Length: 460
Image (cartoon, rainbow, N blue to C red; front, side):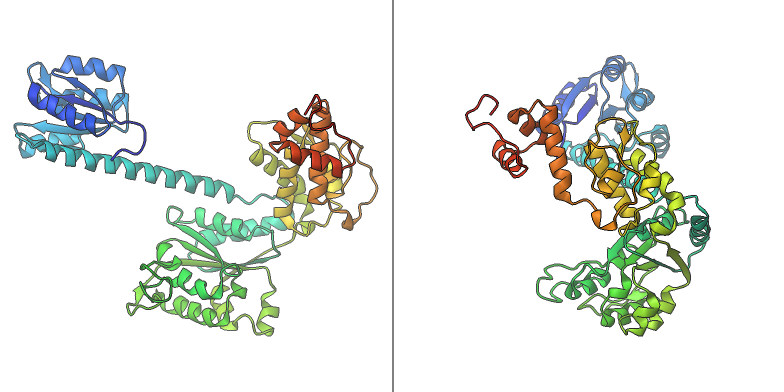
């Protein structure tokens, strides 16, 4: 029953035998049990220890067990309280529940009844934790869905996002890879009236054709080889919320036809099933292709495009919204290194603005992340990564060459050599800092033309 830290239980009862039996039963189940025979003794224990479960006798020689409820809840908001009463009545039950009791049993009571009641209370606690986690993730998702940018080009996009969030219409988002289409979809969802409902995204181009139908619509047990159990599809899982279909124009044509039917009928049928199930889901879709070209090429159904394209939002590439570059850099620095004070070096925004950013906002984020990884001081120089300049040379003002984008191997070489020199060229210390083996470090340094001591040397 217990799969984490031991739960702490308080047992308050003036019957010694019953009290000891309960203590033995729950101690054997992994609880840390404290017992008391009176109100004042229990109050001392509550001041000393916050409890997860409290079993309270209602009528005791020195008072009423209900009087301890404020003390218990003040010590731990998550405590679950079970009242054991020899005087059950409707009025007593109402009073108990109003005071903060979670459940009650009438005496005489079997130990097994108490055990089952405690299991129910623990299950309630677990459900509350799951809900907390879900709310936390939803909050974090909504934060990451914030669209950064205040330039003139982006103000119109913000207006469309706000408009889309205020209605339930379908949204079609276009733009190059890395422009932030999924972030826009999340921003709309978390600003809408269904923000507390699920947001589920799927990349239609990343799933094999044989699986995408089951992924979207679900499948009954035995519907195909490997379908060992009935499974819900994403439409069912997103019930009441939003389903975001990324790269929808690359979905196989046969499935585009089925998707069109779902959008028209608002119902789905699992693979291998006969039951028609109604679904209430807001659908948003996106593509990095030109929809008109995809339609002309016969790879994207015109009627599906019209169904999806109620509100159209086009995201421009980063090279066309460079007035947002500084704000984006600040956002990524604060997001990737919270609590630390880093800033761009002088003239860095101007130098970065000379780059075309083929990977758009996603590429900029990766560049900032690599720069933070390699940084050696409070100032960051991401342009050195973009234009492949050595880390120890000042950045020039020459016009960069687009073909000079840095290779991953160059980043690795720069970092290894920097740590090697910073550690006084000590092999062992360098390997430990980099979290690699000595043999790997020696091989890398040999590739870089750096002479290293023999394996039995003083710093090996």
